[in-house]
Image (cartoon, rainbow, N blue to C red; front, side):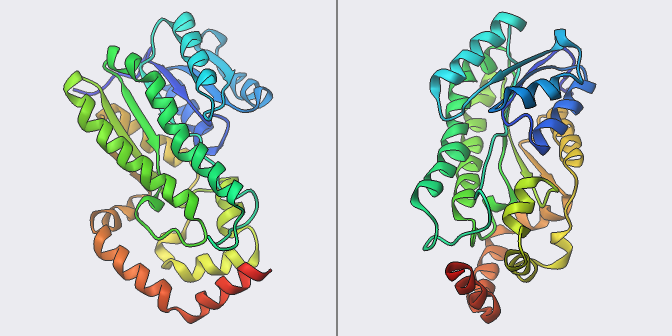
Length: 280
């Protein structure tokens, strides 16, 4: 039976980013009530102005802070009386351009893990009793980097691989309670994060061009991700991959992973660019 989104209460972390904002609009159009969270109240208010006030709540929330998440959960129950869907979407990567493990700053590496991995854990752990009570859904934004080589973006890739397994484990644990968990795997998306980290300068752009085959590099807008997300929610799909051209790679990740590792290690131009990246 198709899941009915109308009148469901959806909490979105990272709501003002590309995927978060597009998903908020799409879910709203399907009748959902929205709890929008991010780090900037002004950005949240700007997004909320697109919706009817009685169907939306905004609150600054820091996914690295347990108390901040608990406060949002309580405010959600106070306003809407329930929580049906949690979309753990907040994520960051390098502030500027890419780094290797050798050249990166320890603090920045750990900050990315704190937000992208532990932030998902805190968000889901805090809200899970409400999700189970409503027989609702958990959706976590992972990435194609959950199963492709994370060269020059290791903390992001580590986090996305970690939350993929976290969500898969969760899904197996809560399905018997009538709730479900889904992993969202976006490919290349036209968002500031993608632009800054995976092509913000000529060097990293060239590395991306050499590192991936042409048919996988074409970016898609966040609106396509949002559309796929809602379709996945309607069917309680455990895996939501967009664009679809990544699905065969996901199916045969073991084979493609081994081949890509070999390719990256043997590619002389890429190895030279890695050195250039570290010394610039």
